[in-house]
Picture 1: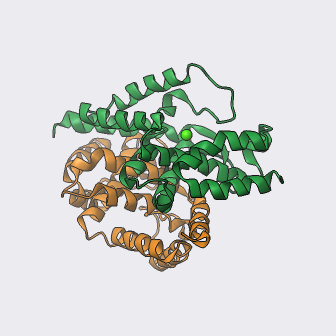
Picture 2: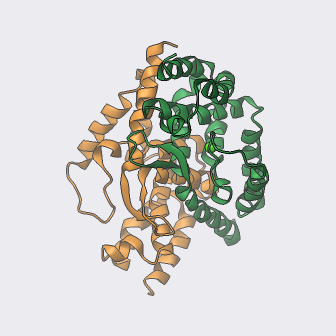
Picture 3: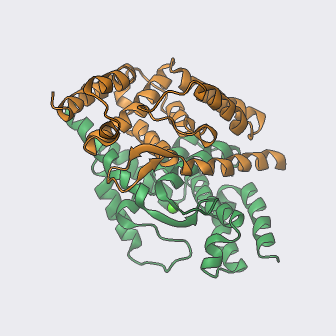
Length: 191
Length: 191
Ligand SMILES: [Ca+2]
């Protein structure tokens, strides 16, 4: 191990401290403030650990945790795009450039491993990525339901829009979670 | 899977949202505010992923990540005890009761697995726990060094106290990190 290997790894770890300052739309459950992307990533890794048996397929929990821990790191450069916000054509390009710059702080081998895990999550094709994405969609839904509507009320989101924006991703990666979430949503919108 | 299994898991995941409100002594690297224990746990899991090759022994990265993700959850009830704060005799008892209550929200099998991982971390005897503890000590040291003294200046901590409070734990679990950290500390205290 060269000193350069270690110092590059530490540069990366210092750089991603900034994820703690990327503020998401979702509030904390006690509604005291908005959630940031670092603590969100911690919570999602805990969701994966606790809910692994609810995945649609037999998943590799280690890979899912890793994906969830690093899936939002690109937001250090690219910012958080709310699910109900205006779509941004350049976001994908911004995020790709962010991944190159930030993972590129690492030594080559780690850069490649992290970049591949991040792209696998983004692509959402593997069973591990589908479960990770289902959790990334399920957690803010849970927050909205348990904060009397949260970002749905703020953004005037309808029952149909919730079903459409959350349903397919959660259903695909964790059908039992969608089964429950669908009922929460129906109760919330009182349909 | 029973609906009761799922609802207990979700109760736990909602309860630990409160870790985002447990404020630590350490600041963020940009010094904009203090760090909370949830985002700290995320960062430590990333430290483990990025620095695994610097462990004293061949560690099981999955177990180390799990330990680091859940090691501070007891703080939801017991609060964070700063390394340089007054020692509290009852803290260990408070934390044991917190672990029983909070992990006890989970179904029995998960309660047992999480409780055992938490105790393994606390005991600090296994090689996985020793690496996890080394990172939990190394990260705030790094923050102090890169924020011109941070909590050391605030608490009037001396060079000798830093060596004594951080050294053995980091040295045992990740000697190459202590090799570097020791030099940072010497430079910081200008010895
Ligand atoms: Ca701690």
